[in-house]
Amino acid sequence: MKLGILSICAVIVSATAAAQPSPTPKPTPPPVTVIRAGALVDGTSNAVRRDQAIRIEGNRIVSVQPWSAGAASAGATVVDLSGSTVLPGMIDAHTHILLDPKYDNYDMNILKESTAFRAARAAGLAGRFLDQGFTTIRDVETEGAGYADVGVKQAIDLGYIAGPRMFVCTRAISSTGGYALDGYSPDHDLPTGAQLIDGPVEARKAAREQLANGADWIKVYMNHRSWVDAKGNLVSQPTLTSDELAAIIEEAHGQGKKVACHAYNGVGMRRALDGKCDSIEHGLDLTDQDVAQMVKQGTWLCPTMMPYFYEWAPEGTAAGAKDRKRAEVHGPSMQRAVKAGVKIAFGTDAGSFSWDEPLVREFVLMVEAGMTPMAAIQSATSKAAEMLDMTGQLGVVAPGAYADVVAVRGDPLADVKALGNVVFVMKDGKVYRKSAS
Ligand SMILES: [Zn+2]
Image (cartoon, rainbow, N blue to C red; front, top):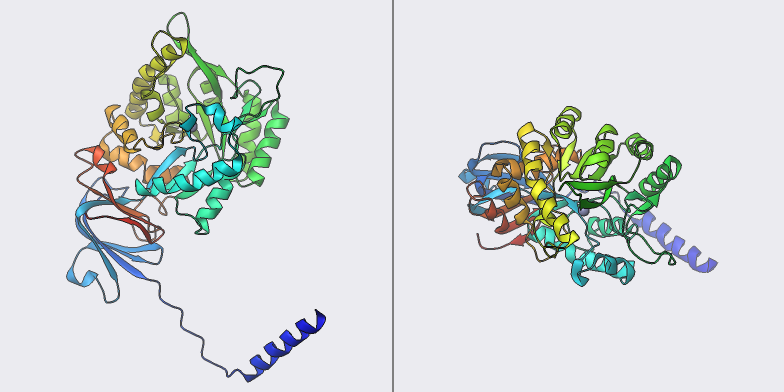
């Protein structure tokens, strides 16, 4: 062994001695792509620009200017999207990539599927976001799959699998009795979807663990079960107390990270807003007071309408009444938020419904709830990027931004459903999808 190392060293020494000094090699220039955009919706401006040239060097956009014959400089690859609407790569700010309702039962994901299987499945599902024009996701809890989201993100970043940029929340935090699995015999010691804590000391410890293990955000549950009371109102069980939430927020903010709060209404919503959560997830039943406080504090709303408007439990059952009530209040709640000017980030809750559901349906529901198509697009581009502290880097087609660019057939401002007709997807300067435009 020792001799082997010595002889290798001798070879290296003699090779070095024999080498002639050579000039420093010139770095290879990054590949240049010029996209010709028929219409450009750049993610921040309300104006649509026609016939633009987007120049990309490596993984960055370097210029955006009116198309001219000289825009396609020698050596550049030209992508002709002159018949399409070009937009920034979109951001889905509420996903669960480790979850699949394939068994039609959330509990089976946790009880019957190994974390290895779930991570492998997530690797297979990741490309679906790219296919639909989503180049970034904020994945808000693995639902019992530990830190598998950190691993999936790493595999994407290293190029082993194709998928969106990921901002991950890891395990999420709730309290005893405040998260699934529910309703089993108390004789069994069962796994849980989120990390359950009691008291500010455990809350702080959970936040520290999750941040240490790769959480980009912390996700907390401020509500768990909900039901319709005798007066016909939606009531939601509060979970974390104010002091538990305060400990988590202090830890996250101390490390420059944000806290996403799952909250529907009532006591849990009040604690979330008074505790200064960075984003309210779902916000099914926001009051005028809640909305005013969100505007004042700059709290984000990620409304995730898709899971609440489809697939209700049968009518005449308690679950069916709850499902219908949640949808009934969500629309007006969203309208109050839009009217008051609450900052809205697009999120679908993908993973809580079938992966075959097209994500464009969330845009349709947002527009039905009173957003303009342009505002809905910006919620999935520059606004979501702002929430992720990535302003100017993601969610915009402008010099200096990452080259995350998509194109759709048709005019999404005339009919937002056109966002589902994706014909081109580039992430980080690499083309993932190109079909006839
Ligand atoms: Zn969710």
